Length: 171
Image (cartoon, rainbow, N blue to C red; front, side, top):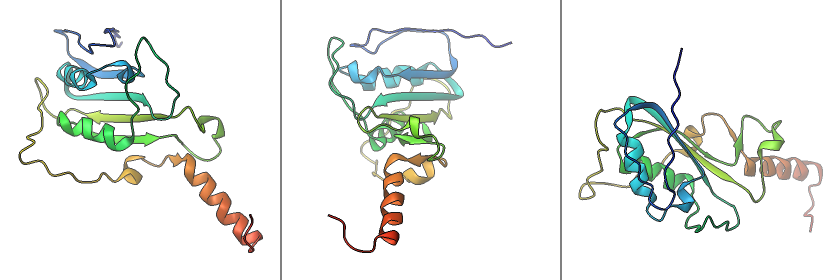
C-alpha cells in the first residue's frame, strides 16, 4: 500500500520546509506565479529521495492570468536548464505533444504547457552546478520527447501531403 502526502506552498515565495523526503514531487502550473521559481526548484530537489522523480508542468503559451502576479512562460530548453541547475537527470521534456496524432484533443493552438520529468541521482540537498566550468549543450528534445508527437509536426505532415496532391503553390 502506498501513501500520499500533499504539500502546498505560497506561490510568490516558492518556499516550503519539509523534513520528509519523497519518491515523487509534482509541481503543476505554479512556477509562472513565483518571482524566484529557481528557489522552489532547489527546495523540491532537496526533498526528493535519491532516485526520486520530479515532474514540472508550466505554461508555454497562455495569456497572462494574474494570481495575483504572472511572471513567466517556459520552453523545454528552460526546463532542461532548471534540471541541470540542480544536477537532475532529464528523462523527458515536451511542449504541446501527444502520444500520436490521433489524440487531437491533447493539442492546443494557444493554451500550451511544457513538461519536464527528471530524476535525482544523489542524496541530500540540491547540488547546484558550478557556473565556472559549465558548458551549455543543446538538449536532444526529439529523444527527450520519448516518442510523443509535437503539434507542429501535424501541420508539417499535412503540408507535405497537400504538396503531393497539389504540386502548385497555393496562396
